[in-house]
Amino acid sequence: MNMNDLFTIDCGEILLREFRIEDVDAIYELTSQPEVYEFLPEWRSTREQRLDWVTNYEISDNKEFLANVPKIGERWLKLGIVLKETDEFIGFCNTGIKEELSGPNREVAYSISKDYRNKGYTTQAVNGLINYLFENTDVEQLNAVVLPHNVASNKVLEKCGFQLRGDIKIDNQLHYHYTLVKDKFI
Image (cartoon, rainbow, N blue to C red):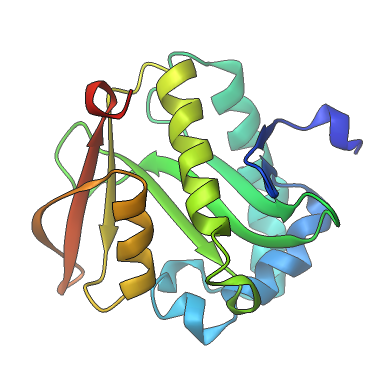
């Protein structure tokens, strides 16, 4: 598939772009890192599961999301974080419905490879997705939930303008609940 055929968001040094089949190994490797699955255990999988998910769900879910902009409803968008210079897949930045939250419950979630942390890439990616959602869709509020000991992720959210709203228990674990409202962001 040609890069020009894929939805992308330019975020400076990185691009957010739709998942492709060629990303399966990179996504599998990323989600197999203890630094990632500690905070996102539901993303851990076998390579075969990852191939199935990307092939049969995630690519088509992205197409459906994009075809329905601006009225995205409960659809998901899962984007790879890739280095602009090399097209290397280094993370992901997603949006979808967080069922554990009351409405409006559109969430932003993300992760980056241990090899690319503390370079500002995650903040660039999250800001890129926020801008896209607020400028192009009917989204009025975004949420994020983060484990309290995930210091880096808490910093990313604060840098992106999210406000800590309180605590929420998900799967018997305490999480911080952040929100970002469109009116306050723009």
